[in-house]
Amino acid sequence: MDYNGRQPMADSRFICENRVRMKPLIAGTGQVDQIDSITRLSLPQADRTIYSDAQLDDYAGLSRRAFPHRPPIHLSLRARFSSENILGTAGFGFWNHPFAPNSGWPTLPRAIWFFFASPPSNMALADNVPGFGWKAATIDATQPSALAIAPLAPIILLLNQSRKLYRRIWPFVERHLRIAEQPISPMLMREWHTYSIDWETNRVQLSIDDQIVLETDRSPHGPMGFIAWIDNQFAVVTPRGRINFGLLKIDREEWLEIEQIEIK
Image 1: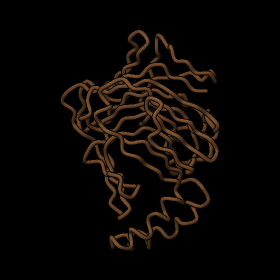
Image 2 (image 1 turned 90 degrees about the vertical axis):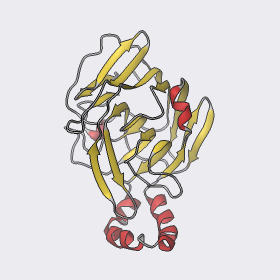
Image 3 (image 1 turned 30 degrees about the vertical axis):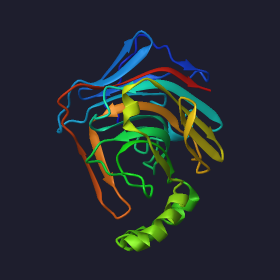
Image 4 (image 1 turned 135 degrees about the vertical axis):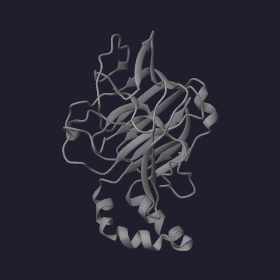
């Protein structure tokens, strides 16, 4: 999820009721190909010394405050992956790209999306939810309630070293950061499924084939952009203060295919 290069898409067939145009991005070995109505985001292979990404989004070149989507809004698309054992991160949904070039100062994350991360990633932000795997998730660390507890972060990390104290403290932090997550069976990743996000001011609902997998009142505020991607990075960010980032070597082709994108 980064910016190293843009390429034109010869045939864009996305159904976007708000007339937002999708643009592909590639970095490293990433490829974006249009095959009839299907867009394939792929990594034929990747090296751990170079970031590789295949991506589609609708916010390139915009300032973050001009990102095109706010509630109420509905997103739906069909998607499948090459495997449930891909390496790196992948997914689709809405986010605020905290480090987007030309979008203003770096900021804290805000997202509603279907998100995948393989080990050694460990982003264990929701209690009792693994820090890797396929999941539906929300987060908004940009709200005043989240920023108000930022000065307490060193104390919170220290207290979280105790499992007992973590159990008492972290639900409070989750509420203020609007974190909500629900694991999804990775076996669904190989097959075509319809994924949808209904984002309202005070409610978020994420569904697969019209079956709700996550419903929460922890709705992010502020504008976000659409993104779908697959890359070779990993991240470790835990409530106990473990932080690490890096790149993974990929020896076989991995891909995400999407079609029938609708945003309205």
